[in-house]
Image (cartoon, rainbow, N blue to C red):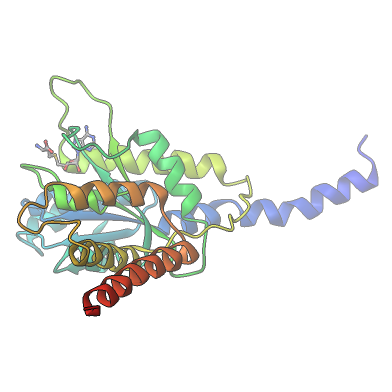
Length: 277
Ligand code: SAH
C-alpha cells in the first residue's frame, strides 16, 4: 500500500502533469511557424492549412503567394479555414522571419554549398527544444517551404541555420509541398508529445534573431570592403561562406557586440591610417 506521503506526492504531481500536457503541447507548437514562399497553387496553401491543423500547428505565414486568397485554398483547407483567416501574408521573407531565432529550410535536394543538413526527425526535436528557450515574443522557430517548381533560392537558404531533408527515394525525392508540410508537422507533434512531460532547463544562451544577424552581416561586408579584403568586382562566395560560418555558431547578443566592436575598431584603424601623410 502506498504511504500517505507517496499519495500526497501523487496528488501534488497532478497539476504539474496537466500544465505540461495538452496546453504545453499547443503552446510549444504555436511558436513554430510554417512559412510558404511564393507558392503557385492556392490549393496547396489550403492543403497546408489542413496538414497543420490536424497536427496542432497554427501559425501559417505566406510570403508573396502567387494567387491568394482563392476558392481553391478554402476548398482544400476543408475545415481548417480558421488557419487561412489568420494566415499572415508578407511582401518579403525578412518580414516573415521577424522574431525568429531558429530558421529551418526544407529542401528536396542538397546543393553545391551545403548548409548543415538534418533529417525531419532531428529538425523537429531541435525546433521543439528551441521554441521553449528565451524571452516571450522572441523565440519563434520558422520552417520554410519553397516553390513548387524550384524550391528555395540560394539566398533564401542562406537565411537558414539548417536544411531539413525528408529522406525519400533518391531517384524521386520531391514531395508535393503540402505533403512535405504534413510530414514535418507530424514529426513536430511526435516530438512535442515526447518532451511534453520533460522540463527542459532554459539555456543561458539566447542566439540573436535574424534582424540582428543581418545587421552584423552588413557591417561585416562593409568592413571587408573598407579593408579591401572583399573585391566588389569579384566577390565570389565569400559572404555566403561567412554567413554559413556565423549561422553555424549562432552568436548571442554579447558575442555579436564583441564581433561588431572588432569590426568598428578595424574600420577606425583604416580611417586613421588613411589620414596619415
Ligand atoms: N523541384 C523542387 C522541389 C519543390 S517541392 C526542388 O528541387 O527543390 C516544394 C517544396 O516542398 C520544397 O521546396 C520543400 O520545401 C518541400 N519538399 C519537397 N520534398 C521534400 C523533401 N524530400 N524533403 C524536404 N522538403 C521537401
